[in-house]
Image 1 (cartoon, helix red, strand yellow):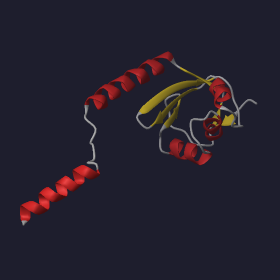
Image 2 (cartoon, one colour; image 1 turned 120 degrees about the horizontal axis):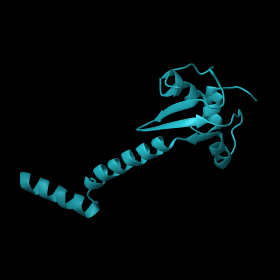
Image 3 (cartoon, helix red, strand yellow; image 1 turned 180 degrees about the vertical axis):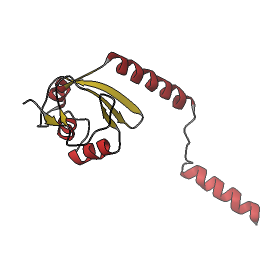
Amino acid sequence: MEKVRIDKWLWAARFYKTRSLAKAAIEGGKVHIDGQKSKPSRMLELGLMLNIRQGETSKTVEVIALSEQRRGAPEAQLLYQETQESIDLREKTSAERSAFYGSTPASVRPNKKQRRQIHRFVHNDTD
């Protein structure tokens, strides 16, 4: 196998659950091949660099194998290799996000007893 469509490869490499999601991501500009936008029908070759943005994370991977079939995750990880810069940047942004959101208090809903107390307080005050 010398060439594979990019949408099939992204699906086979388990970056997206379906080919239609992979196609939508490519058309939406979330996947760049060697720094350029492409179409879902673009043929991938070995050695190309892909920049894939999923949510808040971004990965830069090199295509090291081609496949049109979706297999298990351990086999899918053999299709690409993420660059060290990408791994470092992703870990750094993840640590920053967890530090920021870890310091904010979570909103806690009142339990049944507290709701009854609030209800009594509000209705006794207006009588």
